[in-house]
Image 1 (cartoon, rainbow, N blue to C red):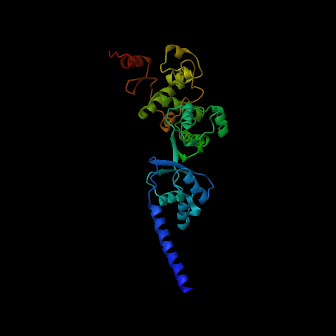
Image 2: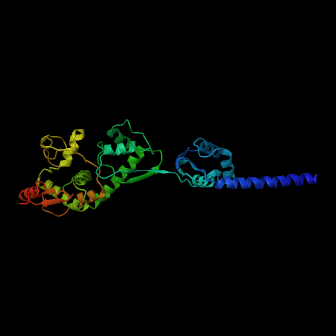
Length: 333
């Protein structure tokens, strides 16, 4: 009887040692995934056995029981988290277990760029494979309504930035984050605006900021651009800015703007209509918003591109015509 007990104890010890050695080897042996990295998804509310089976189905591990045994032995069973993960080629089961335990899920990202339109924002979201699509068949107005926004026209109401998110976050949630960011930043900038600006409200300032954004890529010039347009508004002079005309042309714009385009009336043609256009024409960045609310103190009423991205500013039409001759027509006399 005693010999039999000793025998079973010895077998148990040897079996335990063998199992422990195998489990150690299993835990630290790289999985050698193909290709070099792999995206996996662990579904919400998954238990340990379900997670192990999902790993098998996605080609990460060959059999589920080794991973299950490792998780139980290390008391990680209750702490594994759902989400999307990027696994490198040489990750081992122990490292995989730690990743799932700490919830190191793969994040997606999307960058909305200053000067882009809402249509371009939507296109970028639609092409991002980490984004859950929910607005594909909705109009812009329906998207705004779904967000509970007070505006029907979507243009310019979203803050350009890089947004990080868990994979499968819906497009409407990302748009809401960008919209809320713009409302906060615009409200704060409006609160600290310069005195005596010719805007009825912060929305008009946003419209101006969008024009400034499209007129120059040089941050240092934005307050001067703003100063010119504000001077024009104050004396009742039309803004006469090409970017608004181009926006009003929509799909008809082919990369060139012609005289016939400048005289064809649309709600956005600031050559034919007084004041600001009815909405922003693009997504302005914070620098353009600040410029619209803190314009340079200048008497300039005109500016013309020098050909290097910068502009020459003039106080009167005579000076402006000389600048046009020099920088646009190449006449230096």
